[in-house]
Image 1 (cartoon, rainbow, N blue to C red):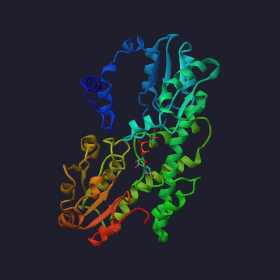
Image 2 (cartoon, helix red, strand yellow):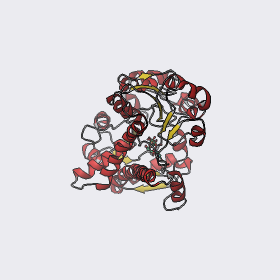
Image 3 (tube, rainbow, N blue to C red):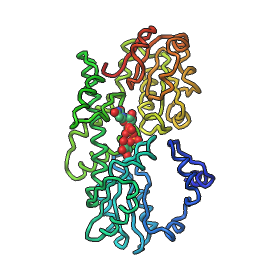
Image 4 (tube, protein in one colour):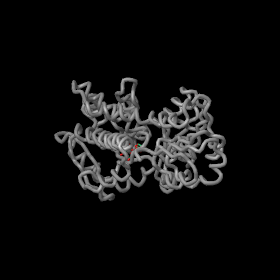
Length: 391
Ligand code: UDX
């Protein structure tokens, strides 16, 4: 953490997030980075808590960082805590019990990695939860901060605001697992899931977004928040049946690729498999809960040799990849490979010279496209065996 703060002081942003470095540099004079709570408490009255809440072994959210912020606050009557971190429903009430003097507002974020700056500037909605009796003025102050963004405001109570965040992520994850299952059935019955998703998405009640099938969702939010909501329900005595299936479908989806490779190659022992992409999605170097890591582990478990390439996430993934080789280019990973598995839809993978250079270099012309990203017709015409998802 100290290193990150130092980097920020030097004007370097230690996170790959489009637009963020420019934003920090443009506002450098108004930004002050510190590890000292006292330096924050003096000038500020509204304190946005943005610490992480990673999953514990049981699937609950680990609130230790939130607790340490709350502990550092003391019992000031002048400050209010605005919770941006994703926390279980009930956290606001628990914090208010511990620090009765401090105002509390829930203000969950809905930012997508790789698009966070834009999502912040153009939010679909801004949710502000306060427990009215104590804090309605606080709600107005938080709303005033966002007013220049011309957003739709949802003013509600703290518990409902906390639930809006978890339910939104759980619903989007449900949509993905749903379309993944439709894709799997489509493979069996000869339908094309891209056509199915297009036809479904035109129904306003369904909408076109988050209907892209693939090899499962990853990242720091969906896996964690879906299991946190399931756990939260379980802790209160309710078995959230649907979310149990959403998680299970996602886990199975990551593993289906192995079956596709085996159908073409037989045993994977000694086979050279190239993974194209390591980040959990493009435009980020984040490999948390990335499908690539599960795949690399499973492939090595089957006896395959794995080489992997990602335009930015190589260093972040290296430690989690075991024996797999992290390559400096896609061509290096594909050289002599028995199969290419496209894991992350980075644009540069579509621009490779598949017909020429790639075809010449690969030992077996087999492509498993985990994101339906490449041009299937073009690859088949160039002599590749091509396997997409649900088509
Ligand atoms: C998500 C939510 O979108 C955001 O609102 C919340 O604040 C944090 O979690 P993020 O994790 O950055 O954002 O990524 P997102 O773009 O939502 O994708 C998550 C995962 O779902 C990725 O692995 C992506 O590949 C996958 N996905 C997404 C699909 O498989 N299909 C889709 O149609 C959409």
